[in-house]
Length: 325
Image 1 (tube, rainbow, N blue to C red):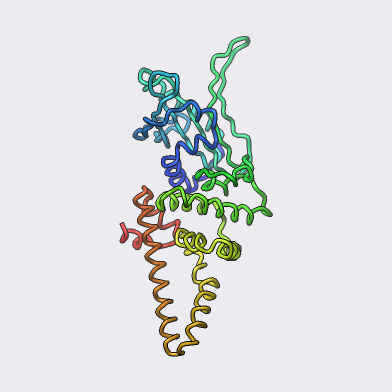
Image 2: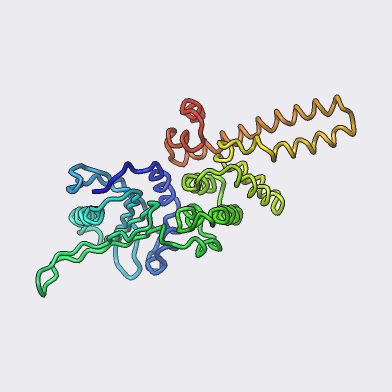
C-alpha cells in the first residue's frame, strides 16, 4: 500500500460536506439529486467499523440517513473523503459497505457509498471490487466516486454552488492558469455573499484557503483589481480572509495607499491634527481588523473546527485561539 500521512484538510472537508450535503450531491451527482428527498435528512453518529485490510478499527467519515423518492423507507449514504494514495481503498469501501449492510439491512432498503478523492495527483482510482469464476459472477461491488483533479475548473466558475467555490483549487488546472483560478474563485465568492450568512461564508473560505498555494504578491494584485471594480465587496472579502491576514497582506501596500490618501486630505486642514488623525485611524484599523479576525475564529470554532485546526489555518498560536473559545 502506497500511503502517506493524510493532510489536515480532512476535517475541514468533512465539515463542508456536513454543511452543504445537498449542494454537494447537486454538483457532482445530479441524477441522484433528483431522486433524493432531503426533508428528513439527518447525520448519524460515527460508526466504528473494523478495517480488516488495515487491521484496525476506524470511524466512517460521514454517514447520513435520508429518503429516496418512490421508496418506502429510509436509505443510508456513506461519504468517504480520501486524500492520500491507498491501493486497497476499494477493498475498504466494500468492507464498510458489508458492515453497514449487516447492521442496517432491516431498517434501510438502500446503501449508497460515495468516495471523494482529493489528492493532487491525477490518476484513475479503482471504484470496483469483483469476484468471479468462469461463466458466473460471484461479486460485483461498485461505489460512486468523485476525482476532483480530473474535473476541469472552467466547468464550475459560473456555478453558484458553494461546494464548487470551496473546491475550485482542487480541480484540474495548469500552473499558468493558477492566477485566473484564484481570481475566478474570488468572483464566485462575491456572488455567494448574497446567499449565505457569514458563518457559512467563513467555512467556504477556510476550506478553499487550505487548497490554494499562498502567493501574497499575486493575491495583492488580484485584490487590488477587485477593489477597483467592486470596492465594497473587496473590503468585505478582506475581513473574511484570514489567509491574507496571515500572509501580511493587510499590512502591505493597500493599507499604505489608503492611509496615504487620508493623510493627504488631512494635511489641508492642519498638519498637527493630520498626524493625530492618521495615528488614530491606523490604530483603529488595526483594532478593527483584530476584532474581525477574532469574530471569524469564533465562528469557525462554533462551526465545529478544533482549536488546533483553526490555529493552523490562521497562523495564530493555539493558546490565543483557546482564549477566544
